[in-house]
Image (cartoon, rainbow, N blue to C red; front, side, top):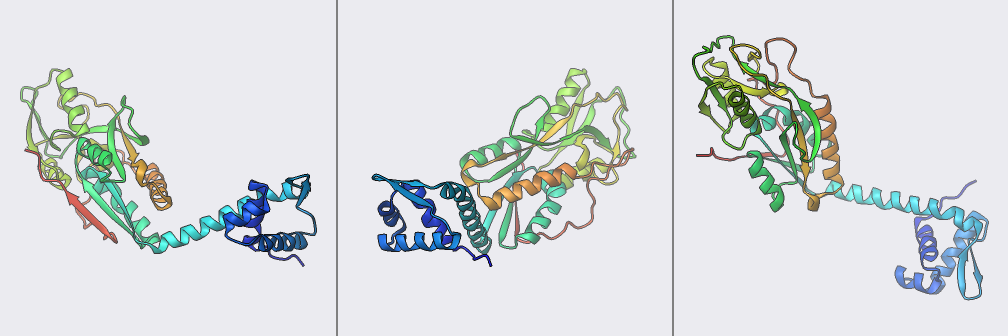
Amino acid sequence: MLQNIETSLLRTFVTIANTGSFTRSAQILFRTQSAITMQMQKLEEILGCKLTYRSGRSLSLTDEGDALLPYAVEILRLNDELQSDLKSMKQREEIRVGTSDDYAVILLPEILNEFSAAHPNVTMTVNCSNRDQNLEKLKKGEIDILLTPVMADEQMGETLRTERLLWVGSSETEISDSEPVPLTGFPLGCVCRDVMIRSLNQNNREWKFVYSSNSIVSIHSAILSGRVVSAVEESTIPHGGSIIDGRFGLPSLPHVKISALRNKDRQNRIHDRFYEHMRESLKHHAHAPTGRKGGGYSSAPLPQIAGLAAAHVPPIA
């Protein structure tokens, strides 16, 4: 019958293989040299073979020792990783996500809900600001992960998905060719706002900003009123909104990317797991249904998120 091998025996063996010395290994492992010798004898007895031999003053591994070494290293790695993971699960962790209000309201709730259910000791904090403000927070170490829209030709972070940018209004929207296009959106610093205005300017189409807010709920309400329109990412189109691309002389809009950046000083196994969960979730997040009606946001209450604290930035003057 095969015997179980204690990890302490394997750790002693790996240390000897690395140092080439019983004496030095005893110092590293805080044991007496006789204890190290006894551990090696026990390991050789279990395996039924010699693992080391002396050639003059040097200590070398036998063929069996060479064969054992990679297994021993991997077993110890898994042992240490397991203990570290279980200990970290018991500790209270915080993951701070910086993003825009539309992503916080539409894209993140389900992602955070699922992750919080699997990791009840993790507190999720979402900080809503524009991209420039969030980049500064990331630089200062105030957030751990930044989820942000990026222009199609811009390189920033890791691209998690690509979105169509669409003109959206309501079923009541009417825009005369002779009048400026009435716009709504986030304040200055919003990528979609910049793209929207640039496209109108490039097509010599007059525009005016009628309503600006840091709240996506307020912006969506303004769109649904029928008095204003906006450039909206496909997955964040409000429920009941109408896609009006190609109407009222509105120019076509480029795609945008949803990208993520990470705080290099705040990366650990729990953060890695959340990042991977977010990446996979966004990859499979549904776009708005084909047709004229949007479906990215509903006025129904958002799911409750365990440990979620939301911080909204006041409107920019």
